[in-house]
Image (cartoon, rainbow, N blue to C red; front, side, top):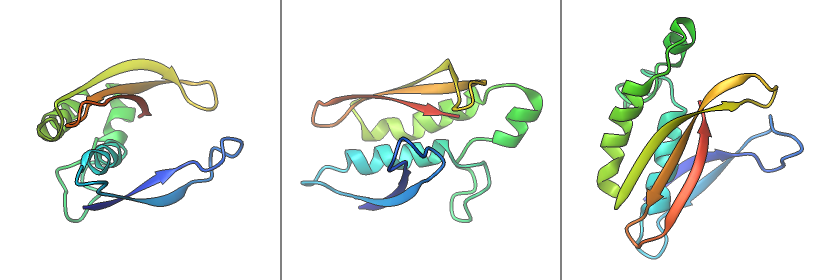
Length: 122
């Protein structure tokens, strides 16, 4: 499997991003699936021409000031089958300008038993 993800190569320049390839490693697709999960969380609902029902309604959430917890639950349910355990919880965080913004903590136990925890800003 192969998926593409965006990273920040230099923390001194947080607005500079680079696309990287994530591929199957030793027969385990866990990092590919995790990268795909992060990309889906950052995707706007209806933005993908192939997967129009994937993503988060970001524009509507900003206008209504309601976090997209329902869509995060749907995303969690879709990706839970690929891991031993997958939990996504909303926490309050701050963006790079110091403005309060919701963040989601993702806790994963991979199929080979590794525990991963990361924050994804919304």
